[in-house]
Length: 78
Image 1 (tube, one colour):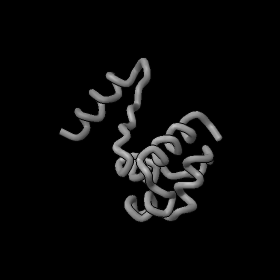
Image 2 (tube, helix red, strand yellow):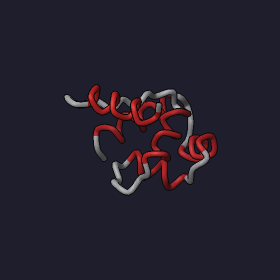
Image 3 (cartoon, helix red, strand yellow):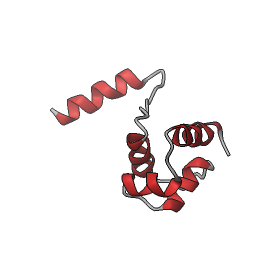
Image 4 (cartoon, one colour):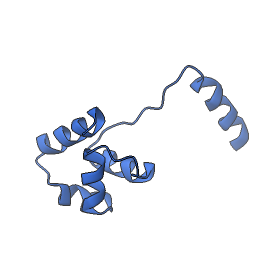
């Protein structure tokens, strides 16, 4: 289990929810919640985002060049 998976598992347990309850609320399979909590690299980002949304966890993308990338994406979308 990786650090991120452990943090998500801890958050879920402190929220009093089972893996099945999180899965149902997020619209993903219970095995997806298991995979996220155990750090499986095959989990789709959208599934991770849905699980984090249910748990009210914010995902932040951060890197030294993120601001430049954001400007480029904003420019492409305008």
